[in-house]
Image (cartoon, rainbow, N blue to C red):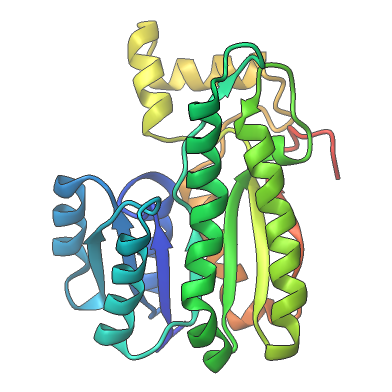
Length: 251
């Protein structure tokens, strides 16, 4: 990845930050964005000359344009976009309001296609790639999983469409569908449960019947996505890969 430039949304914490650090280790220049000023400042200090951290809300069109412009101004190129910004909003059908549906689609679908559009010409120039970070509910939604399952399914369709349109230009697009991955949101739930973090992770993996018997680690996510945006995956496009310890019943 030496000399390549990667933009990671939602990159100031959790799996996004784990990915940013992995890419830097592999020689890339990384631009991360997030909404929390304190995290952006802390991450920016850590990246130093290896990258750039920008405060941005991906649901804001002007923020998205500013991030892409800032990336190109600083580094003069863009080789990969990782649409990682998101959250889980899983409700019963009767509970999810129109406003909640609109907000979820704006964050997970509209923002992803907007950033793809803004990055498109730069990605074509460099034969770059896009990775959309989704969830296994995109393929196997359960009860009480709207609107997030529908938004993730739309993200999977968007990934395939981008792969077909980008292929003649050497631009690849893939998706990573995550299951249970260690993160800050799970740490907060563990704190509320009164259990140790290790016990919480073990119990949830057992209750959710994860075949491998544990949560995934952020570093495992970083391994997969850093591969997908690298030349090592140059013949891989239009696919969704589940990173879930075997949890999803879909292949």
